[in-house]
Image (cartoon, rainbow, N blue to C red):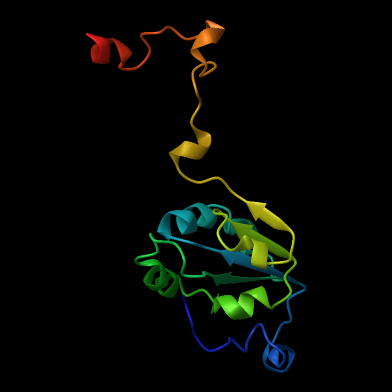
Length: 145
């Protein structure tokens, strides 16, 4: 699990005292691995020019494919909240591309698809008895022969 001291600015009890421009809305970006981060970075530019929105990132460290994630976030120069702080902070919106740990966050949620499996089209109904797929679809003939 990712553990770090709480972030005090721009999120935290003393944040208004230390921030020059107070954001009107806070958006939490929950990442689980580099692939989900890459997908979320596709939509982050929507918020880039809006100074009313403060983006912060977090990850809970539970994903087995998280290797390189912390370094990638550091290279981006984004604000990363520890998971415990993120789940105990109020946000106006949460963006994610995975489901892990999201039940711990109470905010409006947008889950974006990522990877080929989410957008892959299946050719017709997968049930063979419907008649819209030939029995030889795929490798079935090779397996039988």
